[in-house]
Image (tube, rainbow, N blue to C red):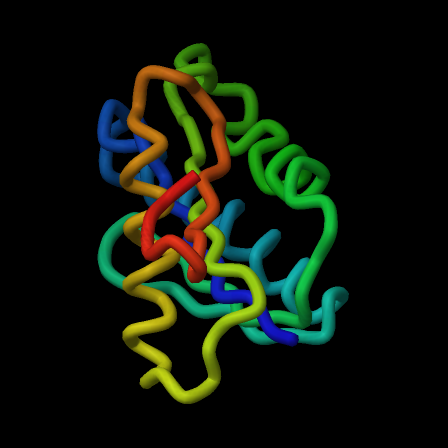
Length: 130
């Protein structure tokens, strides 16, 4: 079973262009390292979104903690950077790959921005987000 994971980065736009780019590069490097370690693949999509397609995982809290560790380095506004994970677990492999990530994105969007770093899961059984 495979999981589709969307990592949304929020708050980096408060930085100047160079610092914001550095934040995204640090997170991107972590996405690349983690996706390889998990036996999956990672990519960057759009301005502030990363995608991970990997074998199904049990503990996404640990993954989120690793991805969000000091994303802004020593910048004083480091606490402004927040990550949201959207997970479509054990994807329906009959679906187009983009549709799989759309479901994961819906889970990330349902988490909202007010909770800091957070994880949302798409439930295939009920066609909604938990």
